[in-house]
Image (cartoon, rainbow, N blue to C red; front, side, top):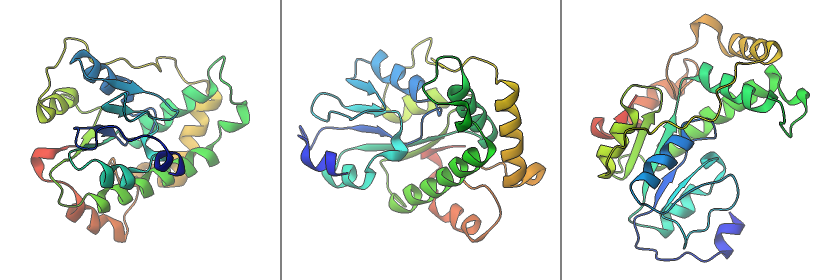
Length: 219
């Protein structure tokens, strides 16, 4: 947040597109869609240079989205998500594959459970902040037609190839076991299928009231 406050903002009236979903949630595909339409797009886990780009993706859940919203009144915010099981599996594969900078101890069920709960809390913060807003989209990137939905809502052209998934490896036995244990800890077979809420609770009733209008929702 401090980094954003100190950096140049560029044209504050430009239409910026911010993808707020975490890594392993279709960020590469969204970046490819933007780039194919000639937009200045960056897909980076590092700092997002505001003056140089108009579309931003990767690790959006670590970004100061409220500050972005206050700075760019014409911005569009996209909460890209996916089912919990495939999200955790992709995360585990990414962290355990050969050449990863992370040691094997970082691929365990406790870490995955924490990540799942952090993701859910972030989803709720975003939904609460953008409640009732027109320039806010929620999309399950695994639901067929997701890239077409994004393209249509943003006035873009859908290229022939829009999916550029980097994680194609199969999970190692250790990673698969960690995912299975994490899902069991979070609720097992009774885990809610929602992409946004993990279990029944007071947030479940709140969710329906927080979701954007149907034309801005692809779940």
